[in-house]
Image 1 (cartoon, one colour):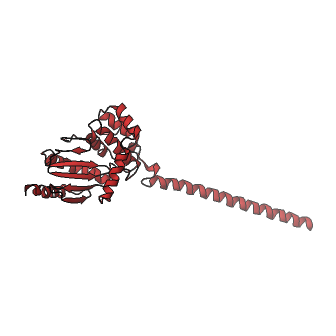
Image 2: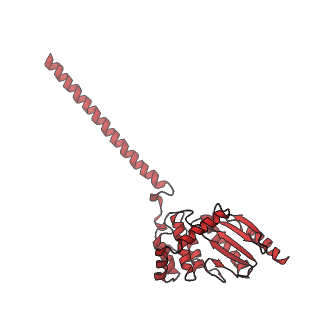
Length: 253
């Protein structure tokens, strides 16, 4: 009897052990399935590292922008110093709406108002507002300005946006843009390495915030009498034309 009971107990123990092993195996398999599924989901989430397109970090896809007139260009200012109206723009090179303004509206303002000597345009960066790529792009534009090509760099940046903080403005891409604009690379890289204009870019951000800027792009249209109109966002050209014409009218009174 004792032997039968002992054998029965051993069978129960073996059966219990097999059940535990099956449960552990099922848990491991389920965990693996969840892990793989999670990786697929992550890959599909915009902005995740695995979702970053390879094109955003390549240098072969960089394009040269169309040529725009930049009369009397001096660093981040373009236009006749004696123009009756001044527009101060606060902008981030990564900002998609800033890009829309730079590509669609700004060329018309340049042609219609800056070239004839009616408007002077001042571009202020917005530091690291969107992220580290914003700051690097801002520094690079100022460094290009040392070689008389701030506005050329401004244009090439805006024509090569690839989303925010997704590799569009990495150091290799920034350097490639400088090469395409035929900058002196030794001087350009030395400027970037020294962070010569980092403080300037961050001061742009502080000045903008102090003036009430809460987002990019934002504009101050300043009339001859010192009065200002504030425009926020990449509004249609007609809105800027209205503001500029109203400011110009004050110079005729």
